[in-house]
Image (cartoon, rainbow, N blue to C red; front, side, top):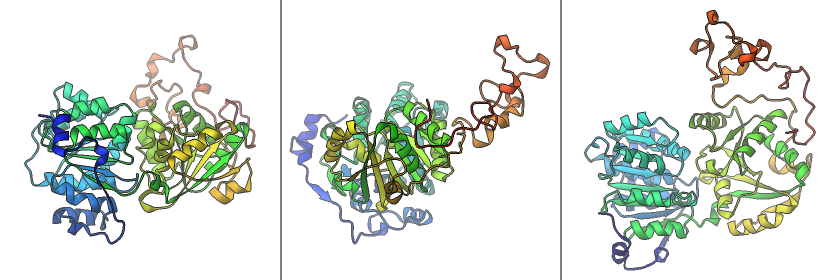
Length: 498
């Protein structure tokens, strides 16, 4: 039976979760993996993966998790939380019996698909080396394959709350055999309004199972979960939420609204990977296209895109073929890309917590990084209050396009002004529109190549009055996106006309 709040508080002998003593994690003289109680097989798998020394949060939490204690872990993004719970989870399940069909033994709940994929990618190779299976279930991915995987038996299930509830309602999954439950990014689940669903799922797990909660920040909403579902937990904290920004340099660039795009374009034109944050999905699409028009290759990542489109955008950013990614807050936590050297807040975040989560995409795993916040004069007062809440004291200066400070501080440079035509996110780069138009003068509306559904020649072309498109309009010419053969005006530091 699930533990009730009354039973839980009695077991702990206290009424408030934040009265728990917090053990600050040391960052020096850390033990090796072999001293943490992990098996030789798991340590060998780590060595083969090139992971030889633990991060502080891993060294602090793994021994307690292996003993079966409930645990609350607070650590900054990029500090190694995934393996902090992933390694002992694998170790706990390694020696047990194989999972029964539709009854996983370990559960990792995460708020977004991107984060679910990140967790799965991190722990799957290590788990497979020890014969422990890991499967991902998340919305936006084929549910039939997920059902088939569950029917074969899954040891560790990495899931988003909504899709997991759907699978349980279909009787394709039961949580009655769960031995260890992990809540990753618990504060983000609270921010997204997932707490009722998370509590519903936790109520379906055995009351005597182990429960682990990891989060970059802890607040009252997270405390509700702790009060109801963790029994006598040990609390480990690498640092406070504000300390998460210590390895970053922070700058505020104040600029006039009409000059804002020019400054953004110059910063985005710098060498290296840059992550730009805006508030809306339409803003992300618009900015990525505007940057492409002035010569900066940029992709967009937001909740309005399909999972396949989001995967391709992340992969292009990760491999460096598209060095700039424009993202919304919805996608912020799922972005795990090494060597992001600059985060640019094109639109100021809503609050200090969002600022920290966005900024945490750089300076990961102890590396340094730069964070720049753009504000217009009307945004300055709100932005200053938000930065104070985040515990950040940035340098501030007034900036205009072409300002030497942009190059000196960020490495920014003026874009070439030569348009970079974006590759549509729903198809690979080798299937751009002109290439597909060569197959047929009447490309299909679904974007499929001619051999996969184009109208056979004997059926004739569709007349113009029935929606047919003349062959000369089937693809954009290389002379310009307006199709009139005119070159676009050179970049002058202003946003292209909408």
